[in-house]
Length: 632
Image 1 (cartoon, rainbow, N blue to C red):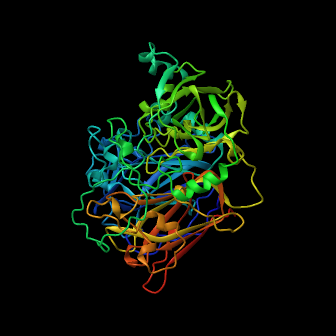
Image 2: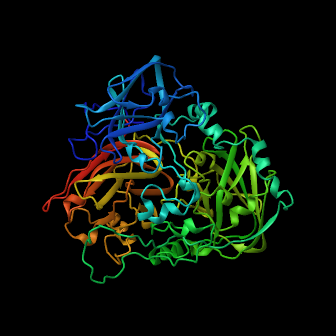
Image 3: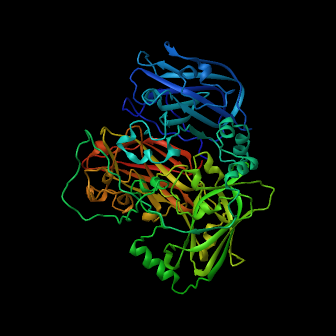
């Protein structure tokens, strides 16, 4: 992990009141004096506040606090509320159990300072933002900087918290953007977690002492799992399932009150192929509302070029007739006592999804919900559409068995990992072993952890005759960072309040060679300005980020997306196998420089590796940010 670099005091927020300085997340920073600098609120001009802050050290415990103070003169609530380590329920909306302070009367940025009783190595910090109500949530912290013994260990945006009286309420003002209305699991306020380690041992120690995880059914015991399935006792362990292909994308009609029109409205040829929406059901409506993201390689409609390439590769490769499919679940992503998946689909020749298969599924455990893996509702955060089982490192691997009524020709399988929440995603499967008709394929196979949200289709394709590509690999002689999912969070523009965009992005491998990114590697949220109801066929779609025309003033090779209330735009680069990246080039938006990205945060598999400013473009020059991801 990257080491911390020098920073300067009074780092500005995202609103343009100064410069932003790059920094890197350190590994297990050590110290005893914390300073939490609250740079800006989400929208309250007078008050800024927090629900609580949790600290975990390198042995998984909460360090003891000796004393704390703040430079705020007018406060509501006690600082003891912020560090309420003794309480299990930290997601409260009771203002008496939170803390806020007036900051508009201060000559310096507001801060909270705590002294630990002794020096500690910090492994994780969790921030619960102010959560009194939907309106008062806007006084929650937007931009935060954390210093430990004078060195910056974190700087970035903290998610806005939202409180709901029922599942139908939107997140803040997200009625303007309908995606979040549709997934009940998405309507719960989630904390912002900052990790300072990738050690599985330390993360397991944290999980053992984490009241949040233990209380909120994040990690269930085997007994809990059996109790959850009591209502299904009358069902057979073998459940026949008809596999249906779900719709992967949806068109979102978004109101555009006060949003200015952008771009040429003359009809153009659509630059992306969009799959046809199916009529949504009550349980898979969230899938229908995912914002026109680049469809992953398991989708039913494939780009013709990709089909041709796959066909050429498979012409001389014969796939066996598959009657019985076994999958052994060898390891999860860190949850201590549970393991699960969201869904499975099978691929036929040339990578086409096989529909309406007559098959049954069983498991080697006593769970009665394995049929959910074949229900076709895969883009979801609803745990009722997922399968979860008890798990122990010392027990034999759990086995899933799919038996087909008639043999099929299968080239691979699509896997959606467990995705109930960011915390529960660690119950997802990490390693599997596949057997076709009782014969093992080359393995083990490494699966990607789900994100815990549905900003993009988190499916992973496993091609049976290429299983060697998915094996856990030893680290090559390189200092490059390795990961499945690379995320760029675009926090603010250079002045435009409604739109934000980029010219392009480039990824280079550990040999400093350009990585050829394909549409199935890319997703953006929101996908582009085409998600707006009054915009159709605008060419500035997300795939222009990887078309290779980056240093250009031609808007046909740029990407533009709306800025949503209380949300930052995101770009995801997703790989089916762990990929080493030495550096990333970010080319800023040039058509209207004010719409270019100002502050960006880059994370790899949920770990922040860079936060800094992207140079603004001009009418004659493209602003370029080059980020080195080599560990020092």
